[in-house]
Image: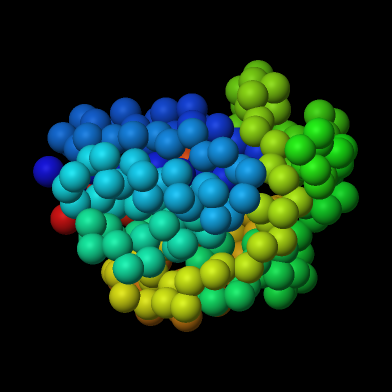
Length: 232
């Protein structure tokens, strides 16, 4: 049986996959919702590669948002990865960073929603402000749930978002890829999602009308269905 690794992105955490995990588990899959460090693209990808090695069998890699950067790097040249699923996620080419891609098309309002502060290890870390989180990140999630998501969000370093993909062979060029995204994503413009899916010659594309960036939380059925297609 294929194991599904779920990699969250910036401003989320592994419990953001709970609804998806329940559906995949019910379908008979082993699932691991990875605690993505969000410290550096190289380090985050290395962590995911270590998990893939520890599983010792076929893996479907699923990334949300910045997690798409991580799975693209982690799966490069990795024969254990049988499919990639991008959930409102970046699918970078060599040299492209999350920040580069987020400004390729107009529409992202994330920059205005962020707060930044220095970290003792060097550099800067970003989080979404409390007053902006619900509207920016999870507009189609109930108030109480969005408040909980704000309180448990995982900040991301500037270096993680600004570092370009280092591998010369992005995984989506050799591994079958599926895309599921929303047309009301305020972090990543829908025009970019469509562009990335077409560039990757996606095997399957789902565009969810009216949904937010927090697609794994608000639309777990659609996300799980896409992953199950990829895992076949």
